[in-house]
Amino acid sequence: MYRRILLAVDPEGLAESVLPIVAALARRSGGEVFALAAAKASDTPEQRATLQKHVQEATSKLKAAGITAHGEVRQVAEESTVASEIVAVCHERKADLVALGSHGRGSIAALLEGSVGRQVLSRVDAPAILVHSRDTALGTLFPRPLRRILVPVDHSETSRQAVRVAVDIAREERAAVLILHVREMVPFGDVPYIEGSDEAHQLMQELTAELPTTEGSIEKRIDEPSLDPVPEIVEAAEKWNANLIVLGSRRLTGVGGLFLGSVALGVIRHSGRPVLMAGHPTHQLDRGQRPAG
Image 1 (cartoon, one colour):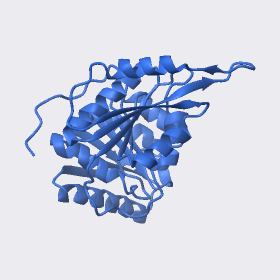
Image 2 (cartoon, rainbow, N blue to C red):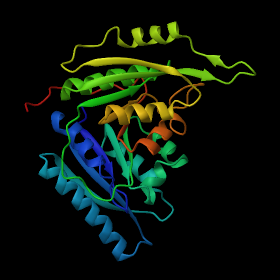
Image 3 (tube, rainbow, N blue to C red):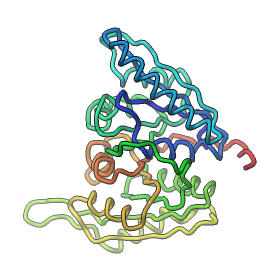
Image 4 (tube, rainbow, N blue to C red):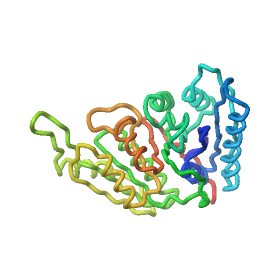
């Protein structure tokens, strides 16, 4: 499914859960991973050595898991940004997935906190895996199997793409899928708009009407209306022990849409679980032959 994965390496090191999810997604498709770190002229020799160490650690662990992996520390102009370098290399290598993971400090952490992240995700066509975690060690269970995939959905077209992507991954991994819709509640004067139950059930029917069969189960769940769906999504991910959360939109959408800076950013910040921003509806998955394994 994902054959060319760009892994952005933070000077502070990677979050524990980003490498296992990258390895799991690359393993089945025979994809290769390129680990990238950016060094500036003002960086000290110690800082450059640390970047090189993190890149080497990432590629070594991926190779040990049977993944083809390469890495590089690139010298960038002083006025350049981590975001612009990630975008440039993404286009250069024709990446079909970008992975960003951080302990919660450093330049990659900044990507997950606001405007810089929007720059990256709005300038590349590839979907993105984002992990925001304060874990301090790389995991030993590597790669971790994907057994449970949570897909929060709304009425946007990109939610349809998220469901399709999640089911495709589930077919590869024989995973279960939980499609979750938190009914919308939008402030509107003294009487808020509340999405009706019939409308919510119609949405679920439309999202799942033409899904391909998978060995894992596909479960649908509708939660009560909420002004802020983030706590509901995070709680569902925790209780269900989701290995991956798939969200549909990287572009700003209308009221109630899932977009970076609102619902998606809240989920990334508070869940600590890998979040796949599946891209926009025009993004097409690579459906080439899956290697044996």
